[in-house]
Image (cartoon, rainbow, N blue to C red; front, top):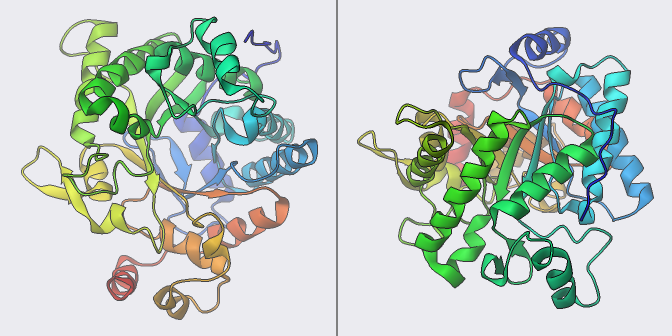
Length: 386
């Protein structure tokens, strides 16, 4: 698994100066409220982000995804999300091509916020005929993990493999520094090893990521979940934000030394849309501030930036909308309603929308040019949606 490095890697990462200048350039057409600060960093991020999961594992899809990323970055959307396993690893290089084309057209690398994820096996080149043999040869023999780190022949949680996927992301995207790296759906291990063992493994992964920040390979990290933040507190797969932050504190102390070391776990991601409302409606997170809150509210209180995933519910919300949402936004298409609903939710930082062609980006730009719904209008719709 030797990585090929690109001597033309783009230097830098998102900065307050460049992202604020970028937002100012697009303010003439972007809706008011389209940009907001990434926590206290003064980095400005768009309310809509481009996801790169959809599409076939083919050269034609690579070209389409690259073009979609370029157009989004040129148009006022500066958050791009990908993962080491998307389209068997092809998404990383497609994003890199799109980013480079945007840079060549005049969009600074420092105006972009580039996110990757790791944990699921990348299966570069496609799933092998003999996964067991592949795992022994490509993972165990390379020192990237063991059977104890694997679940379901699909997800591997070890510092070495997460580091490999971080480096794979940097290499194929052609960048020196990744703005954020998320550990993707670690809760899938809980059924097999339990939450206590998983947390011990996550601590070691967080230590690795804190070192990556120290070394300049990464700026921030976080957790992406599917079930972990949506389920009830007593559910087997539930993950506590405060517990994760406690692990991050320990990781920072282990790397930097001293109790005053500051961690870099700053993002969380979870599914949220008109159907999967739990992030906003389910009060399952104890914040340590004397209250129990929804994940969206708790993230805000705990100074975590929340990325909403599954905005289109795997394409289902591109075809139809919840009745209340359709009634409130009759002039929009189902895709546009889904995006507008998510970005108008109080507490959502950026809603990620998977795209695989330029036409899909056009929908995002249409919504970007609108103001998000006022809180009063959104809450009235939400209550009826419930």
